[in-house]
Amino acid sequence: MTITGEIRGPDRPPRGPARRWRITSLEVLCAVLLLALVFQDRLVRLLDVPQLRTASTVFVAVCVQAMPFLVLGTLVSGAIAAFVSPNVLRRLLPGNTALAVPVAGIAGVALPGCECASVPVAKRLMQQGVAPAAALSFLLAAPAVNPIVLVSTAVAFRDAPMMMPARFVGSLLTAVVMGWLWTRFGHAGWIAERALRALPERTGESRWAVFAETARHDLVQAGGFLVLGGVVAAAFGVLVPVSWLETLSGQIVLAVVVMALLAVILALCSEADAFVAVSMTALPLLPRLVFLVVGPAVDVKLIALQAGAFGRSFAARFVPATFVVAVLCAVGSGLVFLGGAA
Amino acid sequence: MRRETQNILLVLFGGALLKLALTGTYLRYVKPALQPWLVLTGVVMVLLAVVAIGRDLVTSRTGAAPPAGDHDDHGDHGGHGGSRSPWLLLLPVLAVFLISPPALGADTVSRSADSNTNRSEGAAARFAPLPGGDVVPMTVTDFVTRTAWDDSGSLDGRTVRLVGFVVRQDGVTHVARLVIACCAADASPVKVRLDGAGVDALVVDEWIEVTGEAVPGSATEETGYVPTFRVERVVPTAAPETPYEF
Image (cartoon, rainbow over all chains, first blue to last red; front, top):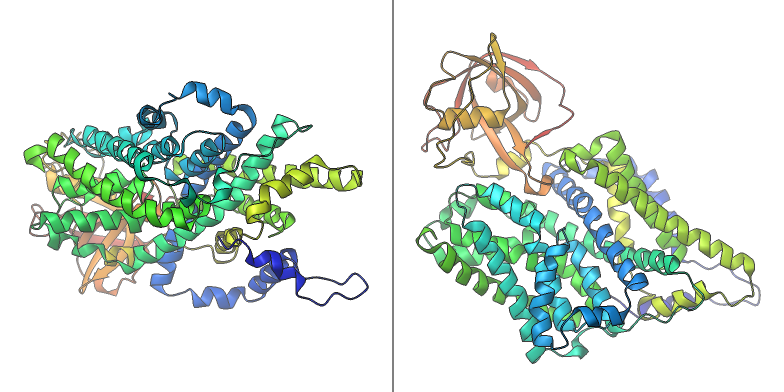
């Protein structure tokens, strides 16, 4: 995110005539590791408070749980960069952006994973010439409409079978509406230039080398942001007492708003959120549906990943808009599918 | 951040995932089904780093030849070569290798609502008959579900054995387990109120094996579906390999 800061950094040490030993990130890493090892006992004792223990467990859990999906996403991203030419993509998607948006949204069914996988893929699609609106529609749809998420929703809500279609329609609608909004109002300048710049032509390099290098690079970049999201999610998980949810049962509007915010800060995996939502029995179905639709579209983990991939200026506009659209789509879908039960 | 540092971080992170998956520690954080994926992810991360290191070595050895790989890297990194975000990868590495956070326990339970989530609301669930024998081992989840929803009285007069950790909330002692769907971030507690001599002396977060009987009709809406358990015997036990129920 800080783009220029460190480039200038290494120039500061005085340059003698002879090759001087410079402090690079490699030495810093060694020093940090060494210090951590030396002060391990003290570190462990410092964290030996129930809240901090819980938070550190949740933090590691979020990272460990999400990493396979992020790696899958970066491998797909690498494969697109290496093996799928922009021409192929152009032929697959309708030329008309307004039409390409829903097609890209439905294509999200094909990427089984949670939201971490879709960010690197969407970024790569943009670099390969897919219209940003379509790529963003894919980004929002993929984590919520894929078969694994739908099945786990149906399993969790055995007693409310309309929850699954309500979630599917609410999420797909969110993705398509956001895609169309971007087509109408979006501005390519909001997206960090690096996210749109096509990869340089790699002559004389094998496709496998391109694949490995792209995947590695995406993984290093996105991984850091995933960890950031994990830290925030763990902190909120400890700081926000979920027990007061029960007091909301009578106030449907407040419950919708609170559940939408909760979805953002808890940053649950979209394959697991249905099981959490089903356990919140004190609340009616509608706020729980909002939780399920907002979660995969906007959460702290995703915000960090998006800011990393597309820049802060993009995230500052896209995230609030998605939040509002997702809440509205969820409520609309809920009123249609859940009706009186909501 | 330099490429070399990035690669080292990748190796460390991949190594951390492999360590968790192969030593069984991963069960503190995620569900068992994730194990093969964690191994695969760890291997892929290490491989991507090793391939990059290998290619860098080859290009540096061939020396003056205009190294396509190196050049491409600069092209690719140019815009955000100074990005500091990869440093964050170090956090989970340190957490796994140095701190190794324990499985969630009593702290998470006392943070949640003082009731059991009512999992089969409205479902006229049909319960299979309990196995024979003097003592029936059950998961806390099964026990709670049966006390709340099984009207056939299958638990009446049966001695049950539960394994869980001790939780004390408002002076009441419970035996509890955490249920996860995917990872520890979505853990929700199930608990059983303990009733008997000596339960107040139990140490919070200690794992115990309790034998006893359910008090019929104790898991109602008023008690938040937390059944009461008349304790006959309590034995401290080691934490199970799989700390969560599913």
